[in-house]
Image 1 (cartoon, rainbow, N blue to C red):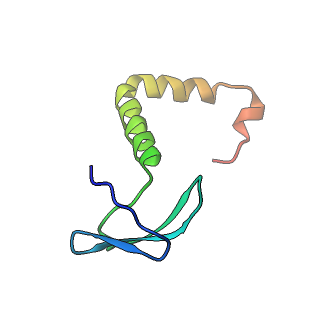
Image 2: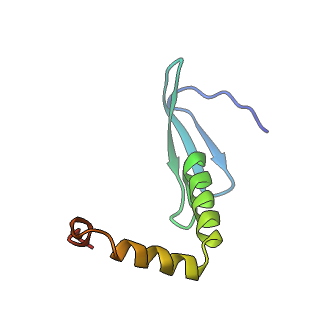
Image 3: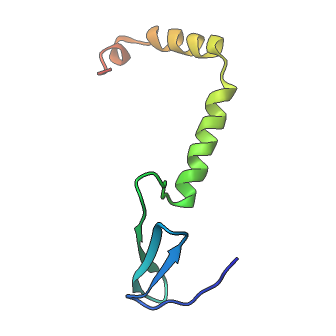
Length: 85
């Protein structure tokens, strides 16, 4: 891991296309601005991990189990049948 110190207003470059600028810094947080081509995905790590967990969970449900769940929800009391879809 590269550790580099930057002050607000200073920038670092990653590869040829990505710039990260320190916009603001306090003792408890840093605000970054990221310039990258649209083809480069820039997301917070916790969002990336949640997405991966959701994909893994979705793969674990068989089509049969999903169909049974759907059927059981259709057979709920009328108060659930009138919800917008």
